Image (cartoon, rainbow, N blue to C red; front, side, top):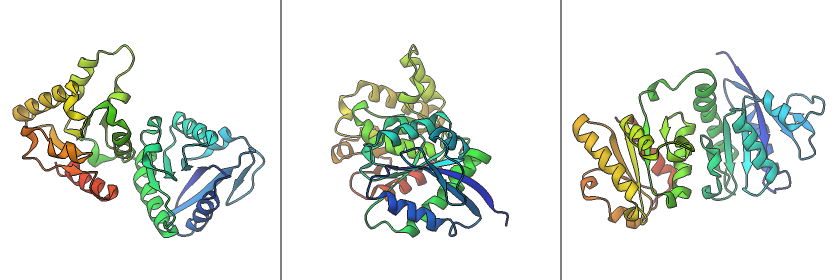
Length: 286
């Protein structure tokens, strides 16, 4: 089997106590990720560059980042250098594997399209290697070398209350990072656009209508209008496929009458990774 070679830029707050642990885990992963040869590039906070395979001359962060095929980032939400490096990676269209030190709510909304995992105290090197391999297969191979063929026919419209963005965006970002086409108001409506026209076009072109329900939903006129439009289209055309996602108990209990026959996914009463896997099953079932 032919080995695929990639360069990875590692962004991390070097003063953080978990930074050496991540660096060591990446070093160990070099010989454990079958079919891939990954050279991890590091630029410390003084701008000095290093590599696991060689030691090139001193080079600033941006030129090193440009060499990389993807980025692994240890993110605590507090280090400005790391935040800048994420922004630079996004501008350069580099796929990012985000390793979270804090709650998923700390992910900035600008980091849409990223894969992310938590880096908990009991997180093992083997788990990191497994997830990194999954990322290489799904993220790098999908983004850099081939489209996600099975997902070309999927177009998801995200219906939610704006006050729920902190809960919704990590889920939507993870979907985007896996290659699913997403219609999400913050990403698709630009200054000067007609909001009703853009929303209408987004729903009309969707194969899946994902509605996030919470204690805030009943107070949103936009959510009601979007749902009514999707229901009308589904009755006439058989699509979009409507998937309810429950963010809290109130949202679960107050599900609109016309959605009660549909099985939803709860993200408040179980492990988020398990809920996400069930969610994916509903998307791919159509």
